[in-house]
Image (cartoon, rainbow, N blue to C red):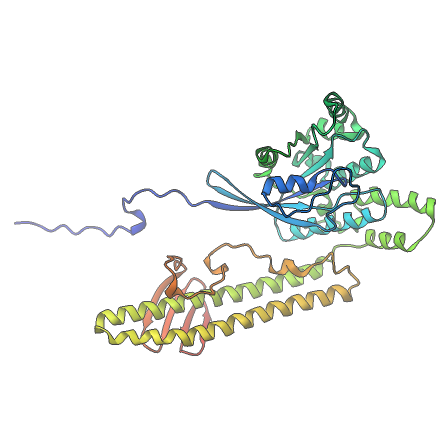
Length: 437
């Protein structure tokens, strides 16, 4: 007599299947690339990212070819982590004129924006042309700005990169200049000797591996630059740019400039920029509105995915059971896709309206609209399937990305009811009714 032994149910995820490689964790980081005009910032980014369309200045050209802050993305996989590295290319600090005040304003706005968005600022690369016999007053002043922008306790988040090695006929002179930069405190010495010291590297433009090796030490770093701690962080004194340590370096220069040339329009504009504070209240207001809109859109996306699953899955099940007639449920899909398209258009219209309202308030508050670009309202990190566009039909997809759907409770030829993580949904052939839990 045989006794059948009831086997305990073992979840599929716990069964002895072939081991799968762990999924890669995605980590998004931001690295600022700074330096004087002609230091080779765009060349460095082009080599690191393999983007050949980045404008690069000709040898000896003094004018910067980068006239705005640009964001270039490099993807690096290290073990089980995929790093999405944003290399921020800024225009070169130039000749100490008022234009440098505008550049510092742009960089400060960028840092403050990412600080408020809780983005990972992973470091600063400061590039210097080793062929330059002297750094000059402009270069030294910009080094002081860099030191104060980062903060003395955070210099270990900075890499000082020398460029253009081998571009002269005197390699010994290049070596001597490097040693001079290291030894002199008014140059790189102070940042390299501090207990939280910066690092120093050479860059070879013929080697992508060299560029990647310079970036790698920053992949696991995260810090808040001193300038954001003074302007926008929780508990910050909410200083104006000119009141920050970095801004004071520029403000002092402007005073000397004013004594030399007297008042003029350009100088008044620069002083106005230095007196400006980051509008934290306006940012928080629109970030809250954006987050609310994204939550609503996420529910809409998840509902559309789950509805497609219910329609197609129900039709297949009904076809098996009824030997054919249940396939009529497929006729629901065209009507649903029409509804889904209208819903996506409404969501997009709401986002456009949010951006327009933000830009309008920026202008009415006498802020510089160029420095407060509304694009950040759309800068959404993909955290789950429901964050991704769903503009194609599930019927034409072989993907198994339907894991957001937990249960399908009822499927018939004219209704689909289902539940997912945050809400219950009901599709009646015309509208999805959402009932948040």
